[in-house]
Length: 130
Image 1: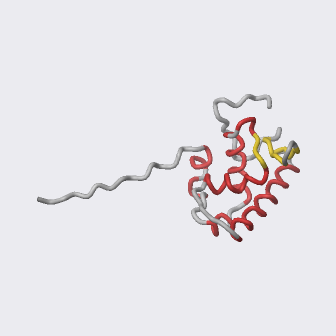
Image 2 (image 1 turned 180 degrees about the horizontal axis):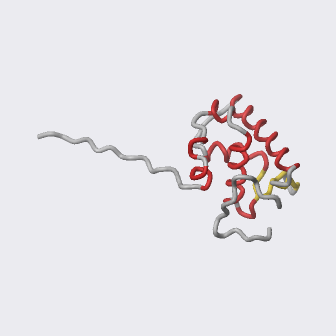
Image 3 (image 1 turned 120 degrees about the vertical axis):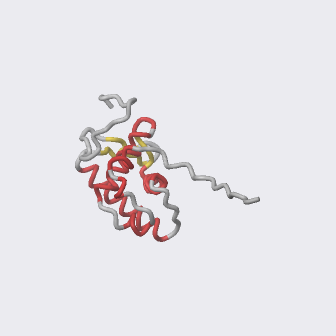
């Protein structure tokens, strides 16, 4: 009698706007994430903010959300380098009004009034007036 081995397939990652638009651009390792272009990280930031309540999140948590979106686990110095790169991109996006940086109990970021290039698809529950 021949035994067959059952292989459990991993659940595919959730279908998101970023994965549909730029599936080939999704970094797989932290080194690829450090070399990622600014528009790829910018699209990830916009997608994350579109999925968050009130379209906002804590600024210091954004690198964690991006790495979680890309299924990358890292700690220590590589994460610090990626966090500084994300902070630089957030500052540039804030100057161009793609996002708004504001202060409540902590520093937060929110989607701005300008639409980020390449992210023209909005979720169904997004209101036109923020």
